[in-house]
Image 1 (cartoon, rainbow, N blue to C red):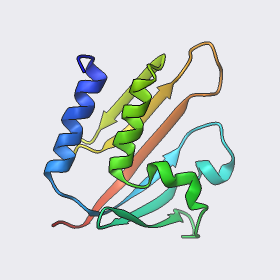
Image 2 (spheres, one colour):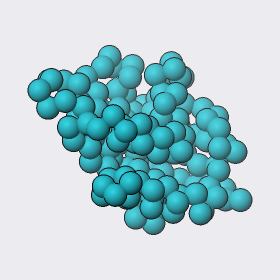
Image 3 (spheres, helix red, strand yellow):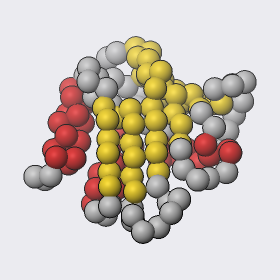
Length: 132
């Protein structure tokens, strides 16, 4: 774990875990080259560490939760980043919230020679619902 991306991931994950936040909500947006149902911004609410709801930001409509299952809690985002690092992508850039430690912007390019397979994930509008 000597590379900077892995080191920062571990540091920020520990920062997140130290706060014991289990009830929260955030807006999530997937910037992949995917169908609209996957790329629309959604509001994810987590209760007791488990996804409670996912709804569209505009209109509050339910969505296909399977599209968002890998991203529906902050710990799952940390796991997804770790899995990407393990695969040794051509490029990975992650930005974190400096106070709470959750990832706010994730960019992964698995292979520089392949077009349109990059992933950009954004987390914003984070709100603690209650803290234990």
